[in-house]
Structure formats: C-alpha cells, structure tokens
Image (cartoon, rainbow, N blue to C red; front, top):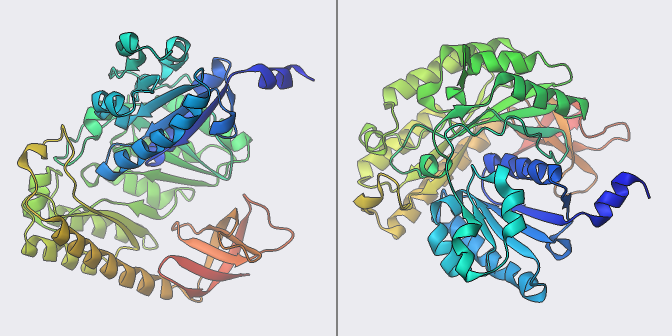
Length: 447
C-alpha cells in the first residue's frame, strides 16, 4: 500500500452535504480543501463518515425546514456512534444559530461562512457537552476573509465553480445575504487565475465565476470586465460563465467583454424581481423599470444571440394587483428564456421583516402559478424557434432519462439531448442540429 493509500485508509473521513445555490457548492469544495489540508479524507456517504457536515442556505424559509428534517434523520448515526461529529455550516448557521442548537441539540458545531479556515480546530474540540456549547459555535464575520490561499477540493467534471467575490453590499429589503455572508470583498485576480489554470490542467472545460453580486467585482484597477478578459486568456478553458450579476452593477465594461471575448458565453442571468417601480423601490433594488429595460436593450444590441434568465418574487409587502400585472406585462415584453420564480417569505433580520406580510399565502400561490404558466409558454415558444439551427454543445455525460442519449449545454446554457456515439466523451464539444424542443430541452441530432 503506497503512502497516499495508507493516508486514505487511516485519515478521519468527512462527508459534506450541500444545500442552496452555486455559492454553497463552491463553499463545500472550499471546506473540502481546508479539511484535506488538515489531514481529512472524503467519505462516500454519511454511514462511512467520522464527520458529517451540512452546508446550508438561509435564503428561504423552506430551506431551513428541509435542513432541520435532514438533521433529525442524520441524528441516528450520532446515536449509533456517539464519537461521530455532526456540524452545521453556512448561511443557515450564521442566520439562526440559537434556534438551531435548541432544535438540534445533538449538533457538535455550528460555523458560519467566514469560519471555514478554523474548522479543523473546531472539529478537534467538538465533543458534545452542553456546558461548552459556546465553544462549538463560530459565526464571526470577517471583513477581509476571501480564502484566496486555499485550493478548493473540486469534484471534477467538465464544469467548475470559482468564487470571485464574497459577501454583498446591496442590502435589498427582502434579502438576508448581507447579514449572513458579510460585506463585499473580492478575491485577488492572481488567486482566481491560479485556480482556473489548475482546473484547466485537470480537464475542466467551463468555469463559472461566482459572487452574490459578481459583477461588482473590484480588486485594484481590475473590474469584472477586466477579470473576464484575464480568465479568457487562460489556455485550456473553452467557456466562461458567471452568476449572479446585479442589474445596477452591469457596466459597459462587462457587456463589452461578453460581446468581444468568444469564451464568455452568451447567457446572462439578470434578476428583475418585480416589474413595478413602486415595488422595486420598496425592495430597495437600486434601479427602475426604465433603467432595467435600457440595460436589456443595450445587452441584446451588443450580443444578439444572448439568452436571458431572471428571478421573480411575487407577493412582496405591499404588492397589489396592478403591481403584479406590471410584472407579467414586463415578462411578456422581454420574453426571457427562463425564470426562477418564488413566493415572498419573511426572513428575520431583513429590512422588510418588520413590515410583515400583506399578501395571503393563497394569493401568493395564485400569482406564482400565473408567472410560471406565462414563462412556460414563452420558454416553449423561444425554444421552438430554434428548431433547425446548429449549436456547439459541451458534452456533460449521459442524459438524465438514459436511453442511450447524451446531454450537454449550448452556449446559451440550454440543455441539448442527442444520440450517443462511441467517439464522444464528456468534455468534448460537438455540433448538433435542433430537431424538436420542449420548454426545457432541445432534442437534437449530431451534425
């Protein structure tokens, strides 16, 4: 048995389970890198682990309910093996630690997004002892922590996430992110490029730059447009994406980089949230409907083939039927390729929390269903218009439904499904022709 195999056999094993957005996925890889550097090995599942860590999201109420159910389920491993350590990490830990410890008293540690560097120390002293509860909670926010010196334990595959910045300075009225992830701080370009070069050397073909407001990136004289150009210069990387930008930070520099750098893909997630100026002002979004429309017009003029997606919230405090209708009208006018739609939920510590709810759950549900139905129709129409066109698809692997089919993404991040061939491998780029389409999938033939 070689030295590496001996280490893998004797090292404490950690299993990380991730909930939430791409930032949480990237943070789980960062956590894996921190613990790997401290001598831990990855476990295949919770039943094989010495340490179980849940990395969580606090954006919506139902996410917390789901995580608490999962903690109750994982408690059986703790009861069977008292020496096992069970930890809760991330935004949910930062947001609601007191209630979490009360509802899940078997937790050994609770750590926020700026505490991952201290995880080996926390795990070392995390033994269940109610008298020492404070010692196993670390949710200090750090204005300067970017983890720039820690190599994430990327899971492999053709696509990888790279954190470009952490935190958020926007303080939208409905959002808890600035309170659980702290203020904006950008990762030095050199650290980002080192990570991208390492990924390219491992065969990753597409990198996704991440940040809560990723296009607000600024380090020295490098803005986000400049960062996109620097990453595009890395050999081996074929495609570059980013999420999530904020409309108020969408500069001409970023639009120009997208239009002129062939590696930067023509897909943009541009959260709208509401089509009513009155509600946008109440949400403290920092832009008007007119400014948003102007941004979309400039972006589509510079990048005609671009696909736009968005976020929509229904039922925010004070939203009345005319406000909701304005949102539907704007969606119909802009014709997004896809949209992520949600019912507004009160989140403690946000600016809007004290205002309470003015829209019933039943009414929120009706409005959400109407938004989803409209977007489904638009997505289907936009995808049907692509029939007969050719696209370069980055192959990811077998299609979810199998049947000897492969799946991958077009430059516009649409899912393409096509017949397998012996010579095609994940990471290859193939040309396909769209034969038919649903609202979510392009059914294609190899060209």
